[in-house]
Image (cartoon, one colour):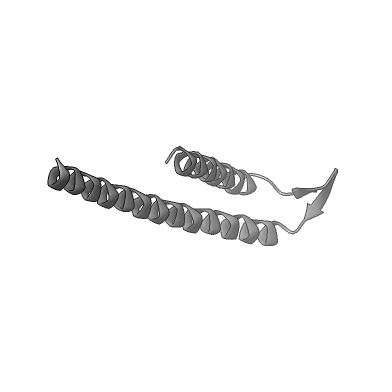
Length: 91
């Protein structure tokens, strides 16, 4: 469960970074992207589209992590109920 929370927090932090970058793009004329160890000037519209796509992918991944988390919780609950039932029947 803790790993799900860590994954969600990391993805949420990424989304905030994407949103911040998108806001900054509206306030500047030139856009740059860091590739490896260098900074390259890029087309602002392409960069904006890329950031929006990255944000959308992160949101999708959060939903997937939440589904996995819910599935895991449900499975744990089911196992707990089975164990309690066995203890009740044998006790």
